[in-house]
Image (cartoon, rainbow, N blue to C red; front, top):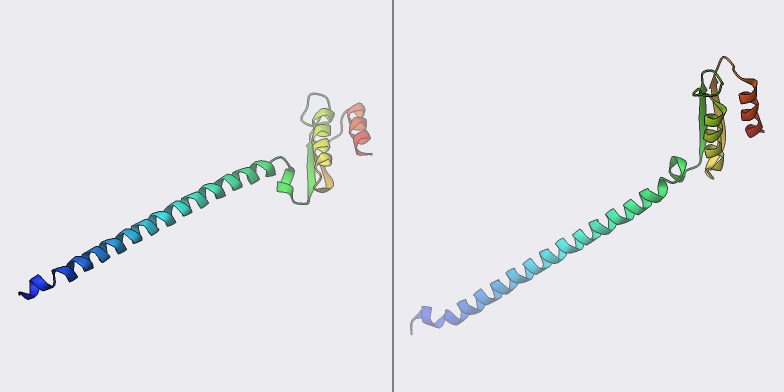
Length: 123
C-alpha cells in the first residue's frame, strides 16, 4: 500500500473539520452583524423618541432662566407689542423648568395701555 492511499482518510477528515470551522466562523460573524444591526436600530429608535419628547419643552428639560427681549417702540403692530411680549412671557412662565424670567428691554417707550398690559402679566 502506498502512503498516499493510507492517508486519504486523514485528509478527508481534515478537510471536513476545516470546512466545519469555516462555516462556524461565518455563522458567528453573521450573528454578530445582525446583533449589531439590531442594536443600532433600537438605539436610533430610542434616541428619536427621546429627542421628540425633549423638544416639547424649552432648554431640553434642564433648569434654566428664560430671557425675553423687548426692542423698539411699545405699540400695537410693532415687534414690541403687548400681544407678542405677553405670549413670549406666558410661554416662559408655563415651562416647568424655568427658574426665573429676565426681561431685556431696549425701548424709548410707547403706548401706556400696551405697557400696562405687560405689567399686569408680570404682577
